[in-house]
Image (cartoon, rainbow, N blue to C red):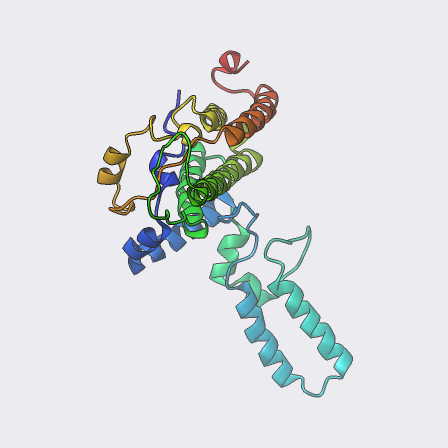
Length: 295
């Protein structure tokens, strides 16, 4: 049922500092290069925004604008202001390419710009979209781990206890719930955004589109613990000792496990129901393999 689409339990307790420390400069360059390849092939950046201009467009225009200003010092202030506005518009219009818009010849023939103007040459490739979603899932884990820290437990705190006798321990457990809630929400939001971008930009009606639709539905199903996702992570349901031993990004001294959070589980179930309805209502309108099963 899961098809490997659920966010793994190790992603919820990942240590952002450990992940950054283990990444070499070469890995960072490869990561940036992979984002660039997705821009060229799929026409979207890592946030799902359309890519129409190259990343060097703004700098290239600024160089050309500076040279033009040096050559045209005799122009009046109004004309100079007009050129500056044009340069600003070109520099900020990476995602604002209009129909029949013209570009200066040096800009249009710049290799870095030309290749990203043509971004989206393989929008029909379901395999590429699946790789894009997989990378966004990995990035969501790293981002959530870096932005939301798991609070350090106070002395004497007992994880997994039914009730905490100390007020300090009760307050800490509530802060622990809030931290894990925030991590879950960030990861779900980013991965959901990746699926929606894929469906919107071609994967929804491409060859083998059933792979995207069904994996999207299974990902949403994992929110409430029916498919081994982050929705059902508790000390009782997951073998954390095995996870910590097998994942190098996790610290040897792991954070406290997520306490039981019925309020968040109820909210997740409501969001899951609405999102699944939204997916199925659109999916049945697209020709795909196994459409009768989707119905």
